[in-house]
Amino acid sequence: MWKARPVFGPPRMPGIGAIAVLLIAVAYLVSSDEEDRGDGEPSGGATTVAVTSVVDGDTVHATIDGVDESIRYIGIDTPEVDPSIGVECFGEEASARNKELVGGERVRLVFGAEERDRYGRLLAYVFVGDELINAELVRGGYAQTLEIEPNTDRAALFERLEREAASAGRGLWEAC
Image (cartoon, rainbow, N blue to C red; front, side, top):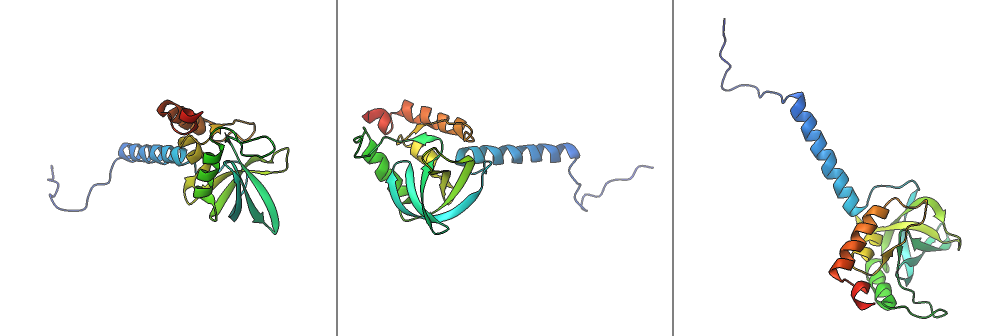
């Protein structure tokens, strides 16, 4: 015998297909957001420190475990402001922008697979809150990409941001 389904009553559970589509959509949104913000953790560790000084557009100093450390940003290169080699085109602007972004701030350092370069500097992705400073410098035209294995976790992101900055004529792409 046929029974009519009540108009009012407990809601029906969505089918497994609807749940799968929802999970895929959420996974896509989360992964694309992480790519843009760059906040997924690469293979190294992480720590939060206060920046004690800004050296230039891609290097800062911080005290870590009582030791003054030089921290070089992974994946980018900014024009130099080193007195021994001279000031390169847009070097002063890149240094000033980096100081605006991280000077006196507490930053989260996320280390890559290789933790130090040949000069003994720590290599890191630098965050203020959720903002990846390495990416912000490239986006604004203050830095170019610099891909050195094995620290290439965000190379595709930096290359995309560099193309966008160059085509828009931002920063060093217009000045130099």
